[in-house]
Image 1: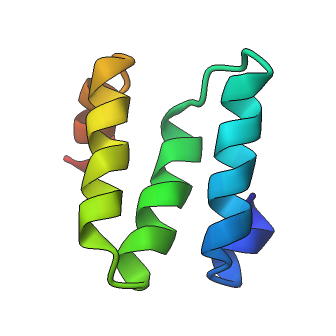
Image 2: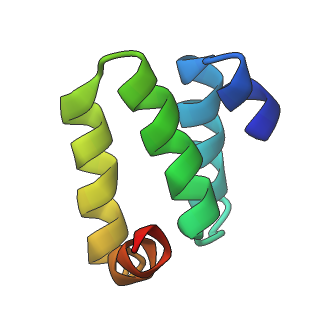
Length: 69
């Protein structure tokens, strides 16, 4: 996922996130941050905000705020 994020390969990053969740794996703050960063850099702000909302729903949003500040 990191390599795909560095290449700004939105499709692969989002597919990996979906696959993780399908397999029952809970994405962590690092995983969500990669998704938000790649979406933001591509100008897909609404989609990035949607990921942030999902983070909050899973209880990871607070951790992101702590890391950022």
